[in-house]
Amino acid sequence: MNIGALEEHYKSELVPLYDREEAKSLFSLAAEQVLLLSPGKLMMQKDTEISFINEQKLLSILNDLQIGKPIQHILEEAHFYGLVFKVNEHVLIPRPETEELVEWIISVCSSQFTVNEAKILDIGTGSGCIPITLKKHLPNAEVSTLDVSGEAIAVAKHNAQQIGVEVDFLEADILTFQSKDKFDIIVSNPPYIRYLEKLEMHTNVLLHEPHLALFVSDENPLLFYKAIADFAKTNLKPKGQLFFEINEYLDKETIEMLDDKGFINIDLRKDMQGKDRMVRAEI
Image 1 (tube, helix red, strand yellow):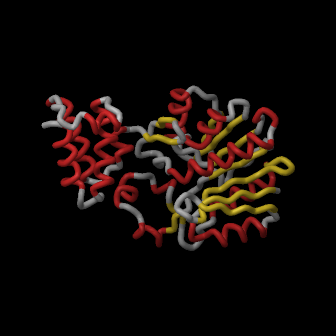
Image 2 (tube, one colour):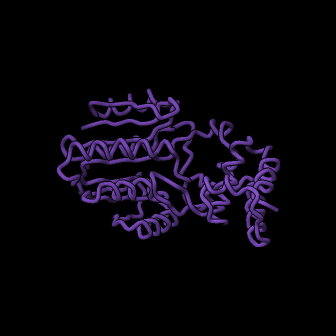
Image 3 (cartoon, one colour):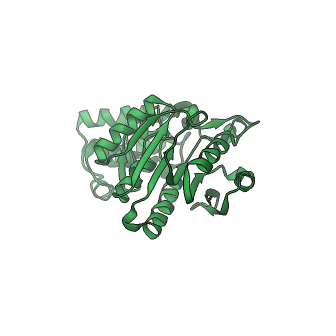
């Protein structure tokens, strides 16, 4: 089978779960890893025959995609802000909107701190995409991160080593965590999806990504935001800043909570899709 024929096979077999453009993108990602071809070269070599071994590898990936397994988990990697992160079932797959949050923080640090010497704490490590990317682009910053999941910490430590940055990792639960350290910036993308929103989510997310990092109760959806805000009130330096990725349906509630706790200069931003997704606040 040649490359073009196998691409068409992907498209036809994945239509129940993905549209044809998404299926084409999935084939491109799979082929890039298996055949070591860039998307551009892939387009120019559609008549090239695929070896039997590589054909079987690509068909195996297709089988996993058909049962809803995310391509990032199949390939065990995800791209974020120009870096490649290992991912598995213990961590969330990094999202594009989180890149926008990281971009915002990098911009603030670059303009407000001498040679980027900020002290930063990330809460909810996951794959490590936020703290590792911040350290990569702000090499003089002191970056720490914590997560309640030891499995997630292990993945993030691996990613930090592979990418070549030093980040301090701590396994802890922010609902009970206390520290005497003071930070210039605290950032978090905590669990914020209410169980009532599950019907809006893609099956592959529900079946294959860690619910611990996704969901909060319908009755107390700002549980982690409140805890992190309380921690930030105590552990941010004067004029320190708190950054959140937020639930687009709870933007007003999040802002009201921060205002009630005494934060000032609260700034709400939309993501690339026009959704209210990021908040910055100062003490």
